[in-house]
Image 1 (tube, rainbow, N blue to C red):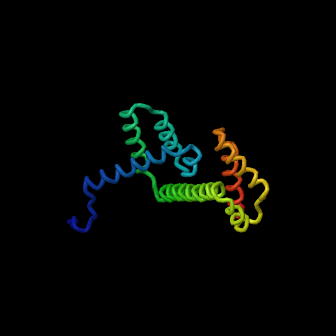
Image 2 (cartoon, rainbow, N blue to C red):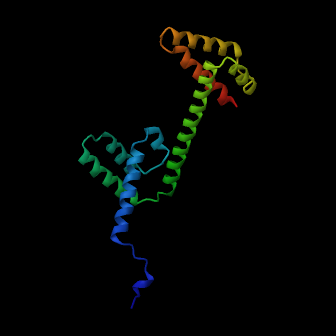
Image 3 (cartoon, helix red, strand yellow):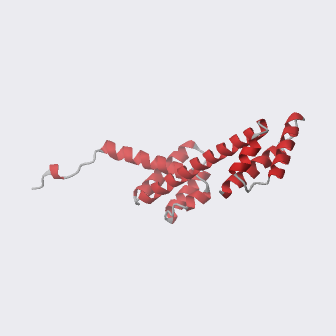
Length: 165
């Protein structure tokens, strides 16, 4: 006779929690861009279920599709998929931090005339003349309430300079 204490018994509640977590994961994958979804290398049936989920507008139909997607995801090993999702999140956070850093430099360059000297000493390959021109144009645009064309260009130039390092 078999002793039930030797078996790992998973309660129905645990199974439901796992199912909900996998459904939530499926929804978060479906919320990503199509390019990002391709990085997961899911089987064709799961890719189709994700595409279908993206097209559905009705909340109740979306819920049913999420349940179906969760069912499909439970049938495969999600270890690699969780790793890919974490890499995407980390990359996104690093990009946001980089943009904040660029934004701080732009504001510093526009508010402090001496900041350009500091910027050029940190990033010697930068073209000081074009930077000065963009800073002056940005300040003129702001004073004349014009569209911020140079302001945006200044951001892009700073971004290119910093990414070179």
